[in-house]
Amino acid sequence: PGKWTIWLLRRGHRVVLGDLSPRMLQIARRELAVAGVVAERVVELDARDLSQFASAEFDAVLALGPLYHLVEAADRETAVREALRVLRPGGILLATVMTRYAWSLGALLESGSARLSDVRTMLQDGVYRSPEPGRFTEAYLFRPVDIVPFFEAAGFQTVRTLASQSFLHLVQEQVAELRERDPDAYEALAEIAYAAAGDPSILGISNHVLYAGTVPVA
Image 1 (cartoon, rainbow, N blue to C red):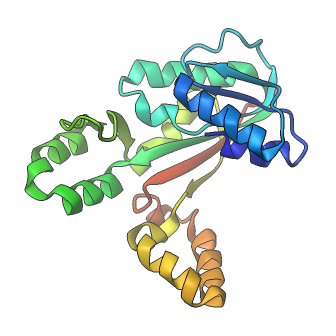
Image 2 (image 1 turned 180 degrees about the horizontal axis):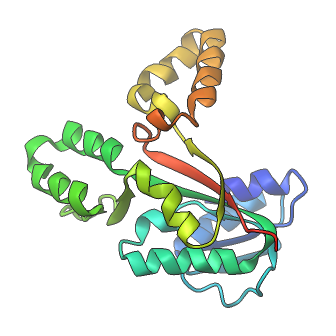
């Protein structure tokens, strides 16, 4: 918590950091203090209700989590409409979603047939609910083909969709080892993965997809 806030503050931006979890905010405040930076505000916040902010108040909104933890379609739609409302014309939304196929792969590799029924249900309706306490909370996972229409239906103009892990999602441990063993090869691989991140054929391989869209200018 606070990682992107620190990154943005160090580049001269004014930032309001919001999170639903008081515990996450506590950690974020600690991390900001350690980094020696100060956010404009750090507030408890529900992505579905941004009423504490004025319309057209922000140049950018980063929604890096809410959309895959809101399992009800109405809640996701409300969150995106609220992001649209608080952005100025021409402002940008950067939002992450999670994908069904990558999640299915991870779940079955980890737990095998014990979670087969859960995975099959999730592939149909996109909703995952873990039966195991203390594990990843319930989530909504997108099909790649549905990502752009979802945001455009709320009124955004699409700029790009990027596979956050690109094709490296499948080999993360090997990539970490390569970074230590051969930094030059690692840098080359990272550049290749970045260049491929917008390839539509890569989107479903990545755990997360980053959507970038703008508010239309009248």
